[in-house]
Image (cartoon, rainbow, N blue to C red; front, side, top):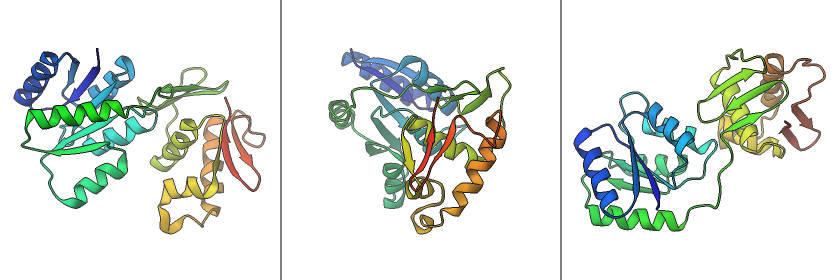
Amino acid sequence: MTRVLVVEDEPALARALAVTLRAHHYDATVAHTGAAGLEAAASRHPDLVVLDLGLPDLDGLEVLRALRAWSGVPVVVLSARRTSDDKVEALDAGADDYVTKPFGMDELLARLRAAVRRRPQEDQPPVVTTAAFRVDLAARLVRRADGEPVRLTPTEWHMLEVLARNVGKVVGRRELLHELRGPQLDRETHYLRVYVAQLRRKLEPDPAHPRHLLTEPGMGYRLEP
């Protein structure tokens, strides 16, 4: 049975979606906030996510980006936002499809079936553990080995997130800078040395001799467990 996570704060619509999905032999779970949705995605490993953008605690795009940090699960966005710019932003953030409200259930079900067919075989684990620290991509938390939380700036977190998504692999300098600062600044790689140095000071036991946040000369950076 296909597991579907519905992240929708409007009670009547959430209830209607859950009833309809279960009637069509889906295993439906409902979350009413972005935080609850991310927690359910990490614990239940759904095959598909139906995501509203207008949530009470987090913007749906934030939820989508957080989910994409560790999961390739298909995401079908539901939204009353109808402009082309809104759709492009959601698709660029990692949505597989975009359905505007109001919508017909038959059309939505067809789009869900199509999204499930495109589902990747497996996701990365939402937690990356090293000898010195632990990165929980789903919860967006970093803790040292002794359990003490580490406070990161948004840019530091984003960089660590990209490296953790590719744990053990080299992430090219231009690719990493594109993620952090956008395509117009993807040649200004000197910024990366600053960000990496900041992360090493916060996470490495000996920042001058890093064991986990490694530089690959002439190539990029790698997170090594």
